Length: 348
Image (cartoon, rainbow, N blue to C red; front, side, top):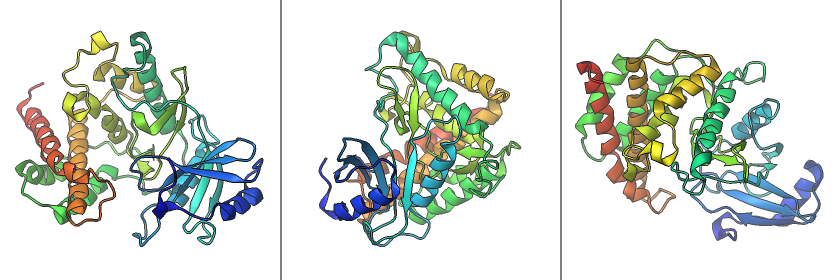
């Protein structure tokens, strides 16, 4: 779309920067903005020779000190460009706010498909399993990266990832709480008291899901993982289980629960967990361990939605649909607590 008024900047200034810092760039530059609710405004650039790029920048206005860290995104993408993890090529980082008003970076434009619906309605039935395998195989590649050798040993704190996440999200939830939800109160007590012994540290994306990757236009192949805003050092099972929440959440949440997977040509949760574990040479997690991670991720989702809803009430949320998040705080929390109760009862 055309660039929104609030997100416009001096395109000639950008062109001068690119001429000096982006190899192969041909002036002038034409700027369009991607639609969507990204917290970091994202633009498609086209140069005078028809070559395309993507620009991600901090939004204008007063920001929290650690938020919208485009320098971290650029750093991790640049490092992963040297691995077999598919990431857009990173071209240049600019922290000089005089160029376009805020810090930004420029990366490759991956011309492919974004698959928004996990049912893959636009993919022939016989091709859907290959898409899922590519998604999990790419995750296994990411988790196999030697982050220390890549210079990312200080990209986060090693160990205690889930404990820190529960503490952080729990505090944010209580700070934005608008109604008492019994399941959330129980989870806030139970999760930190039942932390698993698993404490492996790998590089994690933080929001690894289908629509944060670009697929080849016709092949079941990932061209690039995008949106690295909350990437850090973390727990591989926390990220794997986040991806697998699809199978635990119902149709009306955009999940796979309730669908006839075999009829759709889609794999089961167990099949994809086993596939990832075979590729990553990790043991298939025991049921109780896996259920803990599933409950943790559903709790995290509730915390995030509560924060979005609270911001909608005070008028600071960026997404016009933020108020709808209030309706979706309780359901994942209650689902998480049902999983905990089933664990305690030995069901399943």
